[in-house]
Amino acid sequence: MVQEVRTEKGEEDPYSNALAQLASVAQVIEIDPVYYEMLKTPRREIAVYLHMKMTDGSVKSFVGYRIQHNNARGPYKGGLRYHPMVSLSETRALAMLMTWKTALIDVPFGGAKGGITVDPAQLDEDELEELTRKYVDSIYYNIGPEVDVPAPDVGTNPQVMAWIMNEYSKMKGYNVPAVVTGKPVELGGSLGRKEATGRGVAIVAREALRAIRGRDIKGAKVAVQGFGNVGSNTVRFLMEMGAKVVAISDIGGGRYFPDGVPVSFEKLYSDFLASGTVGKLPYGTPIGNEELLESEVDVLVPAALENQITEANAHKIRAGIVVEGANGPTTPFADRVLERNGIVVIPDILANSGGVLVSYFEWVQNLEREQWELEEVNSKLEARMVKAFKDVHKMAQEKGVSHRLAALTLSVDRVVKAMKLSGWH
Ligand SMILES: NC(=O)C1=CN([C@@H]2O[C@H](COP(=O)(O)OP(=O)(O)OC[C@H]3O[C@@H](n4cnc5c(N)ncnc54)[C@H](O)[C@@H]3O)[C@@H](O)[C@H]2O)C=CC1
Ligand SMILES: O=C(O)CCC(=O)C(=O)O
Image (cartoon, rainbow, N blue to C red; front, side):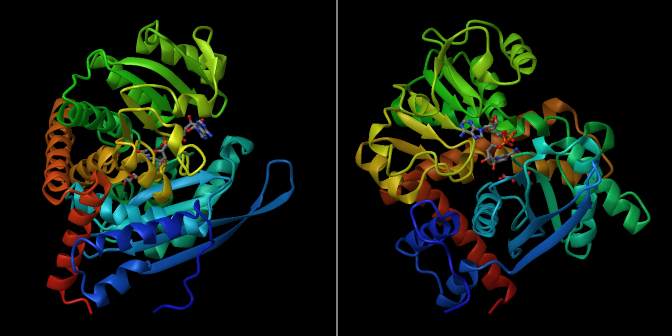
């Protein structure tokens, strides 16, 4: 028993929830106690303090993390988050989720996550670049194409990835595109990576609705919370599939469209950019975040942050299925309530794995100095997402367990096998 690992208490502590998920797997398959103990904690935790001279001459300090959970199946892999609520517990939990996600979608990576506790909207472009470069300088010895490969997450984007690549490459003395994924295409990023997570969420929603409810995605009513990279692309591909997107939201508010979004996705997105938030779109009726989550739809996609479906609102959810675009949007308590109410949850590690899958494609392209056509990326993404869904669905049916437990069980089993074969003990 590792005594120093303490977690905050409460339903919404991300690391406690990640540990609870791991414990649930141990009820389904036998996990050698040595490996179970190893999986409960990350292999390495890095905390760095970044001191910055701001544009106005003041000095500010920020804390950044890189948590490396497991690398039995390959280099550590996972996104980098810039958000004021970034914490050690959250980053630990997200790193563990990445280990399960890479195993489930079966790419040769382990799991990691990084973050800086900062509101990027409060920094100007120069400050953001400087902060990113300082972070890279501080974790330089612990990242690299064969070591740990960061990628975008909440509050970061291809530009931030470009700075990471450049700072790392400067220190190496030569160009190292494979140190990071989600880069701009001009710098070796993969075609299709930016849209990949949302595309994958839409594919999994389509498959799940068909397999579980016997319904076609065409005409199905959908609500999507969050309109960033994942949320907006999920809306885009669901609209392309003919779904009726009746509610969308972001941090600035939401909009309800009883008959579906009344304009094309391109128009919706340009109106969103012009108004700066979904809450100020010139059409649709205003809808609150809670109301959106509780709307009566075939598919609900939480695609913002953790802990959106909790003890407080789980009993009010009226969706047919919940497809987790975000990481950790449903607490374990809420999971049980939804299951009892017959609402199927398609878990994060399956639903949003399209992002890391195309990150893997990007890494391969970088190592081989190749650029794949968009069609090749998208058709590989489609095939792998459909297969992953089918594997999880089959396991859920055979074992009579939730899709989350089936997905976690498949993943943990693969990671434990890799640890065992490598002789970890
Ligand atoms: N970017 C990626 O490729 C991947 C992201 N994810 C997960 O998807 C989720 C979203 O990530 P991104 O779209 O990349 O981040 P983002 O920073 O691009 O967008 C986040 C969105 O959530 C909204 N939001 C924040 N708080 C909200 C609230 N209380 N109510 C409604 N909306 C709120 C923001 O306004 C924004 O629209 C996160 O959980 C992330 O870890 C998972 C897999 C890959
Ligand atoms: O693309 C990646 O490497 C990881 C993206 C990520 O952070 C996630 O899937 O949660």
